[in-house]
Image 1: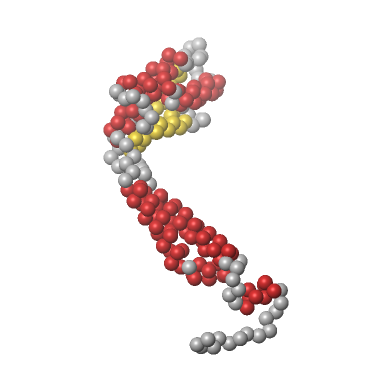
Image 2: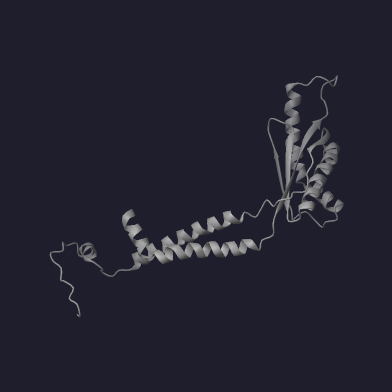
Amino acid sequence: MTLLELLQLLRKHLRLVVLLPVAFAVITGVYAFFLPNQYTASTSMYVLSKSSSPDGTTVTQGDLSASQMLTNDVSSIIKSDRVKGDVATQLGLDNLNAYKIDVTSSTTTRVIDLSVTGTDAEKAAEVANALVTDVSNVAAQVMNVQSVNVIDAAVTPTTPSGPKRALYMAVAFLAGLFVAVVIVVVADMADTRVRNSKDAEEIADLPVVGHFPKVEGM
């Protein structure tokens, strides 16, 4: 099937091609409308490691490499069950399963970015700040870390970060369009009726030498 034939086929079934994507988008929009808003609170911290040099003033390349490795370890500790359990207890929560915790750290710096997403904006900020405080205590106990200092404390977000309802509807519209095209093409391929002289030529592998004119009333 050529592109022109496909376009002609879609034009023939234009109602389905239009209504199905719109229906997908509307249904998704209604569903997304009832989803609770998500709020993301972000904070950043700096990992301060204990100096490994004898005088405590000289910083070598080895010290920097070790510090960056410690930063990666601290990033992992933030998501540990111990830290999340401590924070949940401090805030009077059963657990932190209702919150999405994202931790990112660069391989060239000792800065860690932490974001906490949940349906309660104020609680998300509290969880983020409590995680920084608790991970500083845990890292000092189990690792060669002097402290984890807050650069920017998390504040209560005022605008929701999700769900991205417009994006959901756009994806649903494209999915509906794809389904409509598949239905039209499959239905056309399944239709084995001879509808014109071209179909007759393809089936019989013989040229058409004449046509019977259509007579009104017959």
